[in-house]
Amino acid sequence: MAAQWNSTSNAWLDTGDNAWQMTAATVVGLQSVPGLVIFYAGVVKKKWAVNSSFMVFYAFAAVMLCWVCWAYEMSFGEQWAPFLGKPGAVQTLTILGQLSQAVIPSANIVAAFPMATMVYFQFVFAAISVILVAGAYLSRMNFAAWILFVPLWLTFSYSVSAYSIWGGGWLFQMGVLDYAGGYVIHLGAGVAAYMGAWMIGPRLKQDREDFEPNNIPLMMAGAGMLWLGWNGFNGGASFAAGADASVAVLNTNICTAASLLAWMFMDIVYFKKPSIIGACQGMITGLVAITPCAGLVAGWGAICIGLISGVIPWISMNIVAKTQPLKHIDDVLGVVHTHAVAGLLGGLCTGIFATVEGCEAFALTTPGGAVAGNWYQLYIQFVAALFVIALNIVITPIILLMISFVVPLRMSDEDLIIGDAACHGEDAYAFYHDGAKEIDLARTASGVSMLAMQQNALRAASGASMVAVQQNALANTNALTLETVAVKTTP
Image (cartoon, rainbow, N blue to C red; front, side):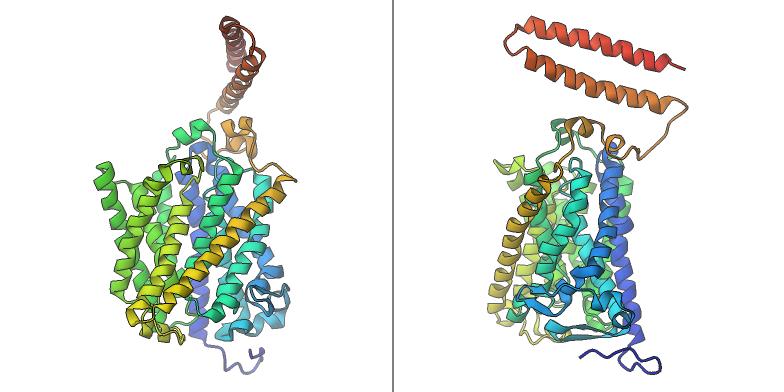
């Protein structure tokens, strides 16, 4: 039973634990804003930098309000069903609830810091989960559809996984190990990303064929914030500033380094040169794979997991994904590989490499994993993975299908050609002299008009000769040339 706030005495409050938990929550928040804001902005084409950043920014804000109004209680509150908590806001929006001792009732977990700290810490995890899903939808999803998708996916997917595994639900009672979210966050987000990419459809052909990052140093700055921010991600999962938090932070960095190097050497062997973008992918897969077991494994186990996470997701991204029919599903940043595949590997490796001592330090009675003779733990990890995968294979398409009845899931082809200026009226890098912006927009508009005219001409000429089609296209080109010249010369 959690203790209530007392203005004169609060013996349950450990100020050291509270300070660490708030610090960890803040650095995890920085992974999203500005970490993934600038990572996404740098890794896409220039014309999508604003839209990609805004998807992250909106999701962070929207999840905050949804979290305190109903989703936190659905994830960590009183049991409503074996897989879901009762919706509400008693602990999150009342002053006495915020000041009281943090407790997760269905899991019988009590922490030495206030409920306000617990709510915020869990919020930054929920927010980054939705933001990771966006990585597969970039450069073509209708922003209005994204506005609707964020609260719906948080409510019907993330909250179900979080309660089932962390909040005291049926998988928690079964004994699944997910130290900081390999399944709840990364496996769920990765599968949802892939299903959504299939539902929304691919980018324009020219964008898929030519999608060089517009700012690699900016992308690297975001990647660096992800790496070091993961110290709070995994280090805060123990809910205390203890030895287990230190083990989690060290193992996180060991695994990440091993995974990055493994991915880099795979690039060298296969592509004959190392790639900084590839190294970032290897970094992410290492961070993801160690997440479900960061404080449960020994250092040598972290190295093994890092090598596995640097090789198998590399194969799935660079070989398997390019086979038929998978290559037609346009997962822009390869989220299914870096998060779903890596998260699945990490969860299964937890069932293998978890140690008895690591579990004891995390206040668990689980007798380790396969290395400690407990092969049954691998079975539990497998069942939990199947549940998260099945949940998102079903829920994500249903959510997107419902949204499609209200607004289109993707932008029009005309808006896709223009990018940020069409959907937000803004440009990421506005280096214009007087009048240059208007000319640039006129050229873009002319290009869109040209495409539309050519398509109309081809449709109209379905029964006509090729000569007639060419004459129409030439006439349209001449008209557009005169239009562009007139715009350039207008004072």
